[in-house]
Length: 220
Image (cartoon, helix red, strand yellow):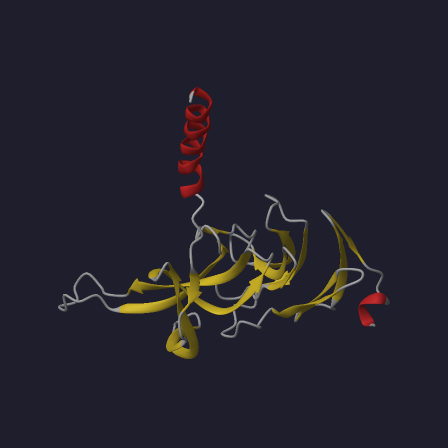
């Protein structure tokens, strides 16, 4: 009897740990078309689509653009949000909401947790991120808004794996004013940057190390 009581106690002690390992349901809703203001004076608009991010059937956030599966459990997606555009002297009491594109987030399908990714020099308008594995390649903007840099970042790394100044920020009205979206290749893993103000170039990514390829390789 004493032995049976010990076994039963051990089983009961394991139950809380099992209960905390609940798997959550993460889904994306249907895309909805919205207007996004662009340009320095915000006189132009473009159409984007936003989708709700649901965790266990409840809206946790909003997203825009395509997702990228990093692992079989985690994916990245860009956040979308609404900002209040009402002036203090506006008579209306209801806020005037405008859609904005935000940062990238890492989503865990099993836990339902979302984590903001700190991509160095990432600009919410100009940076077009190209993903490969857990690497992000894009053209970033300096903190003073004057310079453009080519960046390769890794999700788990605090500092960029690669950063190179590629010229002056043109402050154009198009997201591709400074750079087109970088292009990835595999075996070896490498990414080609396509800046508008200088020649294209390719860098090879090997774990946490990045090397710029020879000039003739970037033209292949």
